[in-house]
Image 1 (cartoon, rainbow, N blue to C red):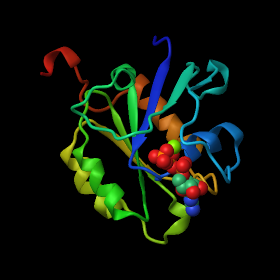
Image 2: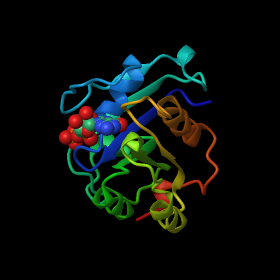
Image 3: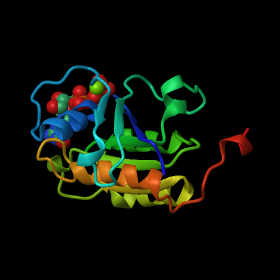
Length: 168
Ligand code: GTP
Ligand code: MG
């Protein structure tokens, strides 16, 4: 059994990474957020899978070929994009890593249409993408689900298990 789970949130600027974390923690949408949330640890007994879960706000440009210490330590990476910003979706496809990925379409409160049509081809292309979810930090839609999916991706992976040693 795993000791803990480390979830990293990455994505283009202003897609709502920090807001998602704050919304999860306080169960309300913060009107103002710092640039970056402090690392938080959710105690085992309040997580669905009963595993202490660390959530890290990785602000700054994310590039898969510039391994950063916190990237390497992550067990699962949530790539956040904003459903009302096509450019932030396109950037998703340039990410490939050795841990399970979750595609997170934030700000679903701002659009009527789902971004799934755009996201599906990307999902099909990258086997390390475990799942995708559309959510809203603002109206708290799918926030706890998102972190549950991330936990589950680590504890019960369904995709091909990546073996870091086998990758160059
Ligand atoms: P950087 O740290 O600068 O990369 O940004 P970030 O990805 O952490 O985004 P942040 O949480 O700072 O949010 C950026 C803006 O989007 C803020 O004005 C938030 O209030 C807004 N925002 C975040 N989530 C949502 C959402 O679900 N819906 C709406 N309507 N706005 C949101
Ligand atoms: Mg931020």
